[in-house]
Image 1 (tube, rainbow over the protein chains, first blue to last red):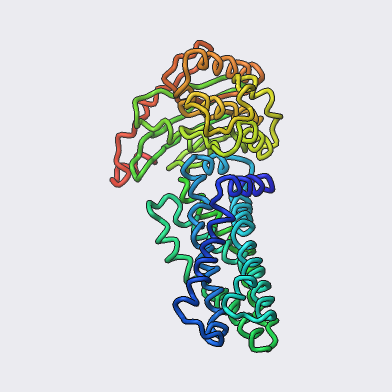
Image 2: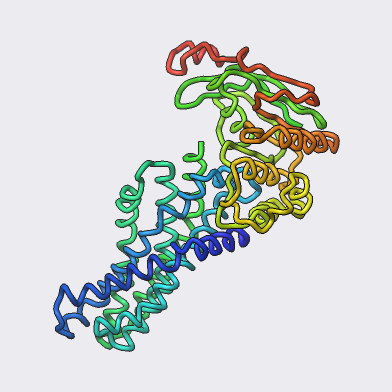
Length: 218
Length: 203
C-alpha cells in the first residue's frame, strides 16, 4: 500500500498535474474574488471563510477523475485488482496520495492567500487547521465518487454532481470554524466535527469503494 | 493447480460460453483457441478473479499473474521503476532476472513512454516474472512481438513450466512446448441469457 502511495506521489510530481494544478486554480479563484466583490475590506473579510473553503473544495474536485481514471485507462487498475493488495487498500493509498498532492498544499497555502481577502491571523490559523482536518474527507469522498463513475465516458460532470452534495457537511463546519475564529469566538467544536467527518469517511468509505471498484471492473 | 468445472461465462448480458471444464496441472500450459469474440478474454478474466462467472466453479491459487491487452505501464516511470513497483506489490523476486530474460537491461533507466510497442509488451511480460506467481493467465501475450521476441517469450514460458509453474494463454501463435489446447468453439453458448432456456441450460 505504501509502495502504491509512493508511486502515485511520484507520478503526480513527474506529470505536473498534481501539486500545481489545484494550487494555481485556488490562487486564481482567490485573486478573482476581490475583483468581483470590490475592494471593501470588511466585505472581503466577511465572505473570506466561505469563499476560501469553496475555492479549496472546487480545486480538490479538479483532479478527482484522475485518481482512478488513468489507472483504468492504461490497464493497471485491472492488474492491481488481481494483485495481493486488497482494493480497499488501493483506495486508501490513492486517496492519501490525492490528499498529499492536493489537500495538503491547499491547507498550507490558504492562510497566505487569505491575506488577499483581509483574513485575520487567527482566522488564517483556523483556516489552515480546518483544511488540514477537512481535506482528507474531501479526498476520501472524492475518491469514492471516482470509484462510482469509473469507466463512465465524460464522467467528470457526473462525478461532480455525485460528490458536491456529500461535501456539504465538511464545507459548513469547516467554514464555520474559520468564521468563528475571525469573530474572535472559540472554533474548536466545528473543528472537532470536521475531524469526525474525516474519521467517519476513513472508517466507512474504503469498504464501499472496494465494492464499487469490484463491480465496475467486471 | 487450476480446476475449472462446468463454467458458464457471460458478457454484457449475453451468455458466451457454457459448461466449460478443464484442469491445468503444474508444468502444463493450456492454450485457449477460438474466433474473435468467442469468450477467451472473458474466461481469462474469470480465472483472474476480475469477472464473476454466471455459474460453475474455479479452483485457482489465491494470486495469479494476469496480463491483459493493456500492459498497465506508467510512461513517466522508468522500465526498472515499473518492474520494482510490481515486484514490491507482489513481494516477488528482484527485477534483474526479468530485465535480462526479456533483454531489457539496456533500457532499464528509459522512461516506459519512450519504448516501442514491442518493447512495452516485453516489459509487460517481464512484469509477470516479478510477480513470482505460479499460475500465469495471459491474454494474447505475443501481440506486437517480433519473431525473436516470441522466441524469447517461449524460452521464459518453458523455464516457468519446467520450474513447476502453469499457464493459461489465449494466443494464435503455435508454441511447440504447449501440451494442451482447448477450442472454445465447442463451448459456445447456444441459449440466450434472457430466455427461459437459459435457466434450463444452467440446471
